[in-house]
Length: 124
Image 1 (cartoon, rainbow, N blue to C red):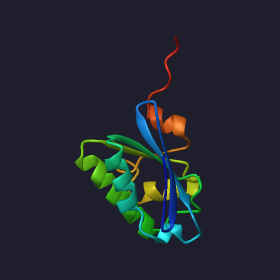
Image 2: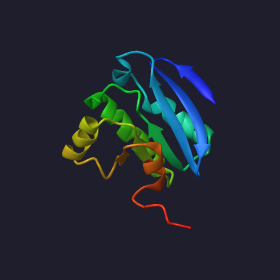
Image 3: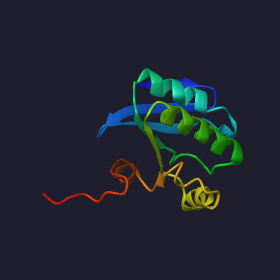
Image 4: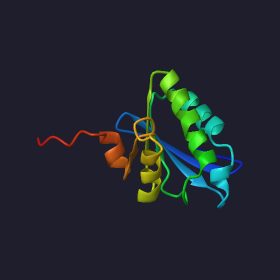
């Protein structure tokens, strides 16, 4: 599924029991444009309760965007779901940690790590 609206393009796919939303900024100011409403509508349409936002294409997060992420987290949590982030830079993950948001907005290096969470793969 692909959807285009102001400021953002989203690539949506399912994998490993998670809805994965790749968030693609259409310009450098995307992290200053509304984001939460569009993402929440996508999550609602897909009837998902476990969501990973892939933010690898984003060039840094700012206060406005953090508030947008928190709004998405409240929506997902309010519906009994889980939200995880992946693809953020080390600097952005450190920022979330310094702000005390790393448990509310858990950020992982990549998609595999986000889907697995804190569990390491079990040998067969």
